[in-house]
Image (cartoon, rainbow, N blue to C red; front, side, top):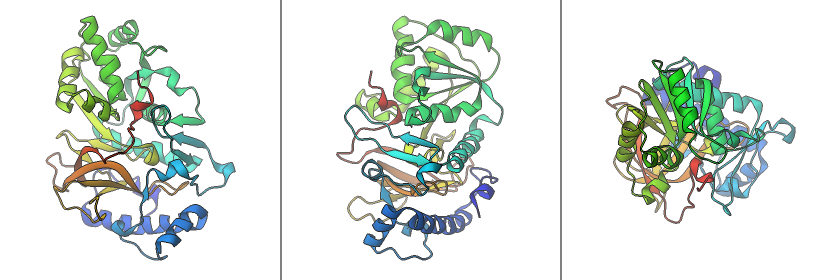
Length: 356
């Protein structure tokens, strides 16, 4: 099944058996394709002794996400590179560079739309971005944060920004936005730490309470900093209800190395793999597969990356598989939770590109 055909499927509709067939064929084809078109990737596979043949999803060789900080991995000629996404990182850290051609970039947008529409619907909504517009200055060399904003902008019409160029809450603009679209469903988007620091805390300090009414807020990245500040997801959601009247909040898990294939939080509070991506959990000691309920390092699989070999990646995050095809929300696929970072992994996350 080619990727365009896969995108016609509902994002959380494939059962375990259906998905295994699709991913076995798709990942085998992508591994072969990248082997033929990306010499450094081919050298890595040769060094690992990976044969050129059919592969089950769990047998597809994975790359550590950190490899994109050390190597330029692309499977298209330089002239076909349409956009380069850089991973987030604090000052002084190395960043990954992800090379996209026009086709891969377009499929990222389509994939993100299909996944997120399961939560917000297909209609464009008045959208408030909890960030500053200045993050989108360079459209050829995007940070993960800028790429995230641009990606989710397909759901917004019109789109406004809650922070000014000094990263301060523009309360006048926010209140004008609320007044203009009062009575309509509103979409808010931002990165977790940014929302907490520059929206929730700013409103608290000013002693101001807003009411966003019928609204949904989607956020991702930056939980590491909130853990350091002892802020739990429950406190985060409760504070948004108290200071802004936002009752529907959905987290997502994603990364620059597989932009588009996010893992969206369902109404039951679980992160889900969609029809377009999958997730495995591996024991740190021997990289063996974990069972349900057993913590492990997260491996992410996607049929989307074609301009670079990012279809099978071992992340620096720990998580737990909670189940598959039986979440009370009704979405098919694996559902899981994030438990933290592997020891000594660099602090990363979309919102970590801004430390103030």
